[in-house]
Length: 217
Image (cartoon, rainbow, N blue to C red; front, side, top):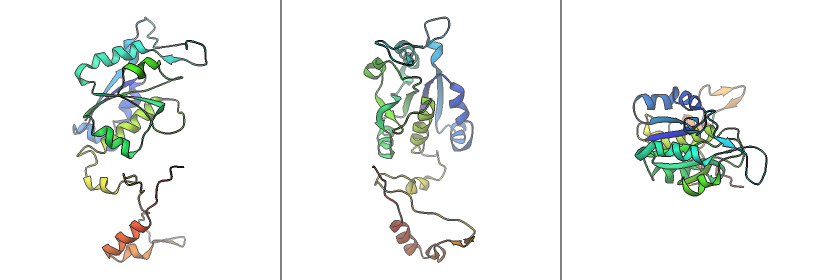
């Protein structure tokens, strides 16, 4: 799987994929990361890629021109284009699976400031995605969340594929069951005895009974 990140801060992206499971996946060629510095596609000597809002209003918007040229530079390696925006579809495990199944190449556009010129949404992207009902300072964080989540579907990313079967969020609206490790007794807080007996069917029943259900309210 290939991810292109259109960003003002390429180092934020590359640093994330230098360590841990994502770093190992990149080194092994399970996923491929490409950063596109949006300022390289400015049409002015100061590399300015934002401007004031027509009709008035606070803040600045990313211009459509630099984003258009950045996407054009990718050619056939552009894949599906996703804009990270607070007004997009709410990202969850079901949507992640749907997006993953649609392509093996994605270009993620990070929003900043007050967002992007709406012509980007109208003409240049395939989907607009929000990671939650809140505002953060950089679309890079949201882009990394989406990329990491999609990467977990790629065979070999996690190493042990059975991990996918017990994900904290699955597609049946259930969350993962409580889990414990040693010691058995910490300050009088003990591990449920059913987990210690080695009876796999009883453990399975206990885990299923104690799964939480997603709260959409």
